[in-house]
Image (tube, rainbow, N blue to C red; front, top):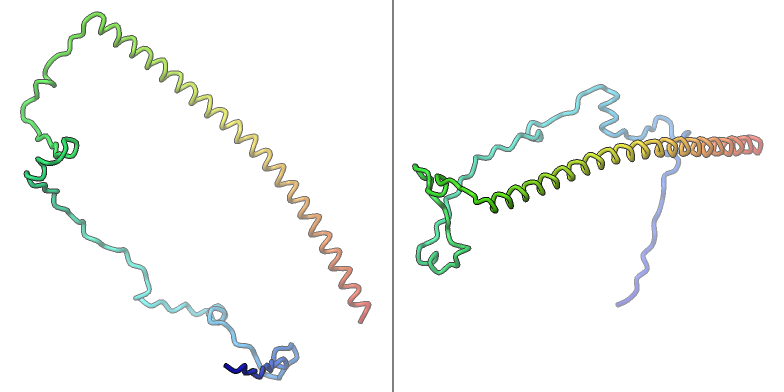
Amino acid sequence: WVPVEIKKYYNPVTSLLSKDGAEGWRAMKPKALLHVETETPIEVKPDSIYKPIERKERSFNKLYVPKSIEGALPFASKHKDEKKRKKKSYESKRAVVMEADEKKKFTFVQAVNTIRNEKRAKRKEKNAERRIVKSKELAKKEEKLDAARKARKRQQHRAEGKLEAARERKRLRGS
């Protein structure tokens, strides 16, 4: 391999880019700007317009497991579809009669659950109230912060303006 030096060529045309460049020369305008100036609408191809996608509903066949394979499966994986019955089953028809001690236990569990649900509802209400108060406080803090930010920005812009004016005065005095 032999290192080859490439000659660099760079020739910018600065005369046409300056304000007082060649007479009659104008830079090219973007298409969007021409549309705005001439007030012509943008061309829209009908192929480019989005259309809603229409898909037909897919229907899948039910899963069929052969009896020989289903027999080898564990009980948890076996198919357990109960067909709708025309008559009510024995379990839905029978009346459950509790004994006295069973009834006491049941009412006690119900009372405990009711108390727990009421406590949960109260806690939820308090949390909601607390959240409202907190959001109001945060809004007040945010307002104060916004005011401080605005004041700081105003001061920054004022200082920048003063610096800019001083530079401009210096430039005018210097030339």
